Image 1: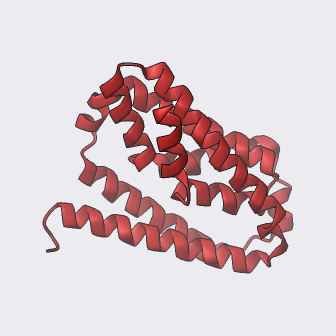
Image 2 (image 1 turned 60 degrees about the horizontal axis):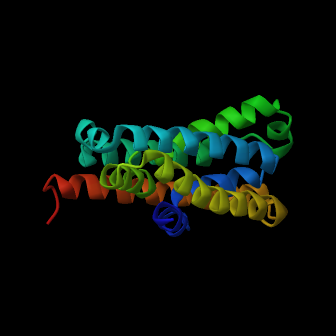
Length: 188
């Protein structure tokens, strides 16, 4: 129960939820949700199985730095890409699922929900319960994001959604880089 509620609250407005929301505005929401949940299951399983070992292998500074660079790259890619929505919808379902999987998987690396799963698994010694609880919270959050993206964001001009998404990714990237540098003593 603790993993469910912790993940449910931690994932609200999270960057991976925004990825799902954004992609569901352009692609079939079921395919986006399948890719997102697949990535979240993989990363959560990795987190609960490795527990404290994962935290030792990937220092927070390195994870923050890599995540920041990843988000800046996605933001720049969104600003520079020129495909129209009609071209993207013609992608085979497997490509959309894989595209979503990769974006969500790498965005979730070192994220607070992943670190929560690591900590809860290490503290409770019940990785299966932590995994199931965390996935329940993520299912609710990402299911809502896929629905809202398909239902409401799809009505907005695609160029507007892409611009707002790019700005959000750039802001997250800058924030993560700032946190990585700050943890190294580069600021303050």
